[in-house]
Image (tube, rainbow, N blue to C red; front, side, top):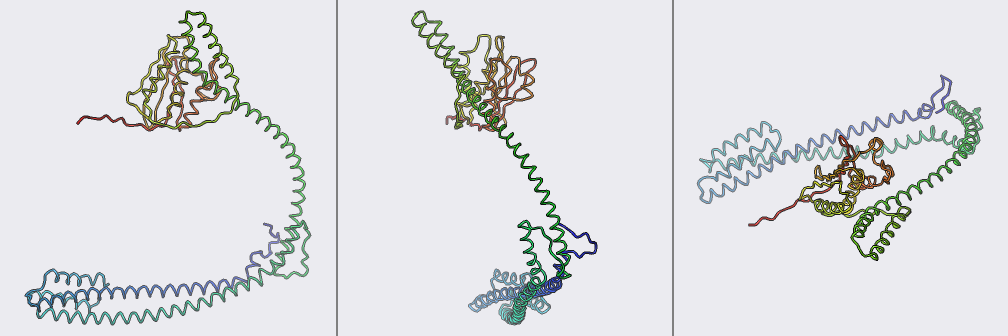
Length: 495
């Protein structure tokens, strides 16, 4: 906001709002007085209604007592000797509730209640004399309560009528005050602001000419002086902005060209990386079962004695080798469809997988499985099988030609299936441990760096995690944690 540098200048806000201060103060005082009066009358009416409700409660309790006593009197007239004790207790209970539900009682009511209690006590031995006297006394009390209620209703009616008159007066007075306030705002605020509309329209069209103050009213003079200062400042800023815009346009052109070049290069790189990852993933996932087939066919070939069969087997093995070479060069888009989880016997899954692995396991490497016999979980079976197969084959490849052992250990804890694969190989290098599992990053010359990356992505999709570590003195320790629901195995018992 631009401000006048003259220390004696009147603030713009004071100029605009000064004519409306008096009207606003009067309006606020009248509104406060009216609201206070209405609040007071409302509070008084609430108190009167509370008093009426208390007297109505007293009347109700007295009427209930009168009904009971008249019933007792009729029974005595019909030949009864003594009043019913239960009904006498009910009358005493109603009388005891009068100070509670009927509000504070005065001396008159308290004396009458004491007399009624004495008459009720006398009615147990002399009902013929006590019951009529008690009924007469209750009738007097009921008549007095009815009279008090009518008086209070008349008072409430009078004050309610006065409240409506005050509300009607406020309904007429407040619009008048509002109109007066709007008139003052129009005369002293809206009209001068309307004069500025033309000047602001000039500003929107780029006209920064100052306004002549020769015929301006002295009260509004500071406002127009501030306007002229604002116009001069805006003109300076507009010139600076034009220069800055020209400079920025040149910088944006050069930056845009560089950015387009970088974006094109990045897009090509991303496409190549995506195609390479898809191709390598397919080759890695299909190469494992093809390798098993090749080993099996090689074993069968060594058992054949017929040269014709050996030649045919060589053709098949050659075709498998060609498929392997083609898979290494395959570039194809893929779509990931998550497998539906289902109840799985983890022990059976691992044992079947171990049987398959042992067919292609070198004789110097031992495969050990440690799985609870009755462990069943809800899992995507094929995906878990492929993940464990990847981990086991990685461990077997890490052991290499040296004698060693690969252990697959599975347990269920903390609502997750924990799969641990341990081997006696050289372990992970420092770069792998510090950087984590990443695609195409491997410490083996013949590896693709996708086995652990695929397992990590599978664990992440299920909300789990993959952790790698080294064992002492050597070896690798891979832990795959998969959230899973465990199924309870129930054994039927004979009766």
